[in-house]
Image 1 (tube, each protein chain N blue to C red):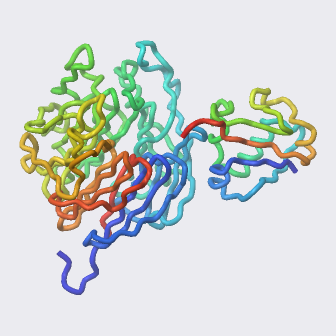
Image 2 (spheres, one colour):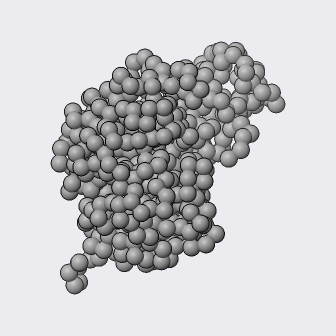
Image 3 (cartoon, rainbow over the protein chains, first blue to last red):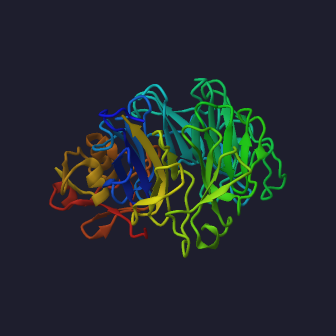
Amino acid sequence: MAAKGAPMSSVRVFVGTRKGAFVLSSDGKRERWDVAGPHFAGWEIYHVKGSPADPSRIYASQSSGWFGQVLQRSSDGGTSWEPVGSAFAYDGDAGTHQWYDGTQRPWKFTRIWHVEPSLDDPDTVYAGAEDAALFASRDGGNTWEELSGLRTHESGASWQPGAGGMCLHTILLDPQNAKRMFVAISAAGAFRSDDAGATWRPINRGLRSAQIPDEEAEVGHCVHRIAMHPSRPQTLFMQKHWDVMRSDDAGASWHEISGNLPTDFGFPIDVHAHDPETVYVVPITSDSQHFPPDGKLRVYRSRTGGNEWEPLTQGLPQRDCYVNVLRDAMAVDSLDACGIYFGTTGGQVYVSPNAGNTWNCIVRDLPAVLSVEVQTLP
Amino acid sequence: MIRVVLPAHLRTLARVDGEVLIAVGKPVTQRTVLDALEARYPMLEGTIRDRDTKRRRAYVRFFACANDLSHESADAPLPEAVARGTEPFLVVGAMAGG
């Protein structure tokens, strides 16, 4: 809690949508909001994220079916932007991966799904691509190199796209081990590097997916999202295509924690900023019905690290709601009363300023929301 | 000078208003015009042509003098009116939903 008379903290929320980016700002009460945007109007903004080392440094992935990929950088917290490098070239002969029909198809770059700034250097940023690959920039996004040890893993030729494309959508950096990184790929699974991205190993033991011939295969799982609390990087939480999973050994093994969820299909998963055993998911009816069960938009919270889940409904629509919440569209702030944020394909962005107990709609009619990130500012 | 008309999204990206005027040496072709355009506005690299193959992106069209030149060779001379600067070379986002 801020001392009396001390400046109140504030939050800045970056919302990527199908038709532009928006910046939502509020003080620490998170009651009154300023909505700025659209930035990059008309472009798909898959992800916008700020540097933990310099909150003024922001990276945004801007793409278009017409005009391809652009990477944007801001040095003033998202007020102004400049296009930086967007030459995402696969390292060497890209080779092939499996296509939907079982044939091999050359790796082809389509877009950047996720940008992940380094924890300690604002000029270092990682980018997750479709077709799945991990890129890194050490010069603020001007130039990019592929960390090709991931894509050239011996299993790479067997990876195949999920319905949304073969995307590398999650990048987690271990705050206690600078050489350890985690990524997740639909539909290949989760991978870990212990040498700063040079080499990778699949970390999917314990996952079961009825949609693949060998339900417990080393790769081929449609991992939708993984999340970590920075104080406990050995523990990972996963929302898989179906199943909510947990690992306590940095992904070496997983066990299911779906427990009493009404459905364990979904996309995002996140962890409370101050309690590593409090986890949030948004259950979605099924893989063919991408909307909440019974038309009721409910976030589920577990205070026990999984298995025991409670619905959080106050302030969320509890009838006739048929939106989806995509994998990168949930975030948490780190104010004393942890704020939870998520955006929907219907264009609503919700905030709970009290860890999920009650919800308010910040903005209601944006284009479909692809991603939500939040910065907690002094 | 060659006159180039960009679609609205690329004008915004390149931070230009209206037509772009660029100097292009002989011969004046799609390739030489786009090479000069990208040299002056590097942020446009990859947005009109594939960055590596230099092939036109699927949903981009090239028009000039009321003709669709999209399927012409990148090395074919552009119409004389474009080379003289009396007609613009148009880069157009193809009609497609979204």
